[in-house]
Length: 349
Image 1 (cartoon, helix red, strand yellow):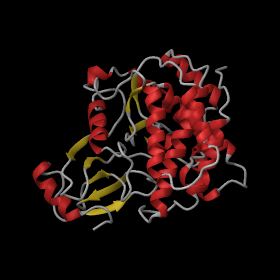
Image 2 (image 1 turned 180 degrees about the vertical axis):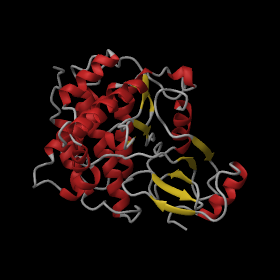
Image 3 (image 1 turned 90 degrees about the horizontal axis):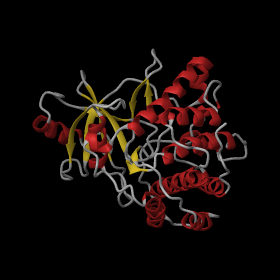
Image 4 (image 1 turned 90 degrees about the vertical axis):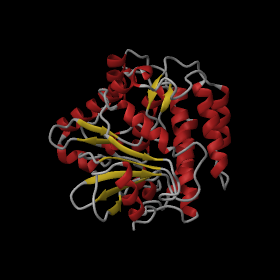
């Protein structure tokens, strides 16, 4: 039995809930790289599927909701947004000890290292990152009501609730003083802009949450929907920019290399990867949305990343994480907070 997943119990449940999907004894392998919800490849020797469940131990309130994640992926299935096919959802915690869902295993590469993209060459890298933006535009173009997600969130007051929610999440896992954190929260609370149009937002949109077709350089699937809701689409754009800025800033050899390697994609450093101004210009041209002032959204993006990593640091310090790559994560929080405090104006060219 893989740690965190009782494959015998899963097999018995699947026989009833999704007969014919898998047969016989099951083997499960934890997919490395996941630092939040746990993702397993489960196989009967012939067919592979993916199982998603919440992390072990301390889980933040409202986070890691398998029902919501399953719902949004299922709803987006008929749209232009590429997502895996969902097979089954289990809300009964007595089966494997927590809610979980089962979905299709999609082929593709989640590029998160510049060296991976360098091997493809700058032209292919540019194509991949252009399609990354195109896919985000396609997501933000979906009418939530048309796919049964009209009640998936409350767009009014979204940004204010985001600040409040992530502040509450931080309080749930905060076990130490973090330089600048209170100042960042105060700045966010005092400068909340009026939200624009509401769309389905992914919440953690970046290249390594996409599966890229190794032959056609197209996007086969968007993964990791645990923070999706209805809200301001510019929050997704700001997360992309924040990861890009962070990759550039953390080239300093004095920064915490272990955390950088495990948590921050350096893919934006690869030749051909769209620079920030071109990324914003492409999103603006295709979506029609004004991206000339992302100050607040960038600060919020860094705050969210800091809170997420602080939660992971908390679980890791209590021995409640699976897999490798967690050492040094706690050292990355303060640089994220500092980046949030100094989030400058990003202007499209």
